[in-house]
Image 1 (cartoon, helix red, strand yellow):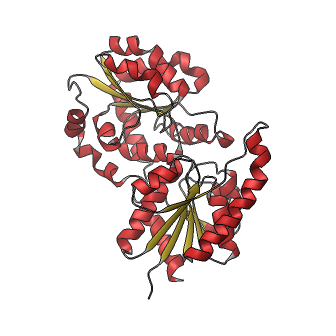
Image 2: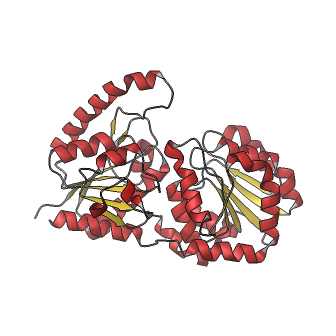
Image 3: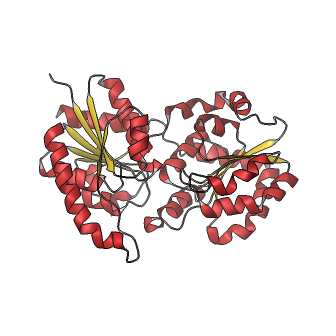
Length: 363
C-alpha cells in the first residue's frame, strides 16, 4: 500500500498553526512514511513557522474580509477565485487522502476544493464561537472536532466530536520543571513571578497596562516575564534594563515560562486557553475585543463562569491593581483557580483528533 498523503490547511495566527503542526506530528508518529503538505496564506506567519517545524507549505493569495471598507475587501472576490484555482492545482498534483482544516483564511478554498473532489475532510474548531470559514465548511465536512460544548448551534450535531484543542506535548510535564524554568529565566527564587502573554504578535492594551504598572509590580515585590510580541518589541525593549522585568519579543521555551510562573496574565485565544487549562496556574484573562464574533471574551467567560480564572475586560483595566493585589495576597483563591482550571483540561486532544483522522483514512 502506498503511503498516505496528508493535506493540512490553517494559519493566520499561532492559534491555527500550532494545532495543525501538533496534528501532523501525531500522524507522523503513527505513519512515519506519510507525505505532508500544508497550505497557508502568503505573507502570513505560517509561511515561516511550518517550514521551521519541518513541513513543506504552499501559499495562497488570500486574506480575510475586514469589518470596514478597504482595498483588501474590494480585491477579496479576485483573491478567493485565485485561491480556489490554486487549491485545485495543489490537490490535483498532491492527490491527498484527507484534507484537514484548523481555521484561518487559506483553509476555506483548500477544503472547498477537497470536498468537490470527494476527498474526506476534517475540521478542527478551536473556539467556543466558530469563525465564518468553519461554519461554511462544516456542511460538507465528514468530522468536526471541537473543544467546547454546545456547538450544535453552528454545526451539524452528528458530525461533532468533543476532543479539545491540540497543545504542545512538553506542557504535560511542566509540574516537574519549576526549578529548570527559574534557572532558564535567571529568576529570583524568593519572589513571585508574573508571566504576561499577549500572543505572538503582541497586544497593545496589555503592553500599555504592564508599562503603566511597572512601579506597582516593583512595590508588590514581584518579577515579570513580559512577552510583548513582535509588533511592540522595539517600543518596550528599553524596560528590559529594569531589575525585576525581562522583555521578550517571543518566548521559545513556553513550557519553562509556564513552569516558572506563579500568576499568568493572558489574552484568551483558544490555543492559549487550552494550554492554560493544562498548565493549571492562576490566570487573569484580558480578552481581545477586536476579534471575529468577540470569541476571546466567550472563551474567557467559559472558564471564568466555572471559577477557573479571573476575566477582566479591556474596559475594566483601571481596576487591575486591586484585582491583582487581592489575588497575589490570597493563597486560597490562587489554589481554587488552579484546581478549577485543571478540571477543564483535555490533555489527550491531539490523540483523539488523530483517532478520528485515522478512521476516515481507513474508510
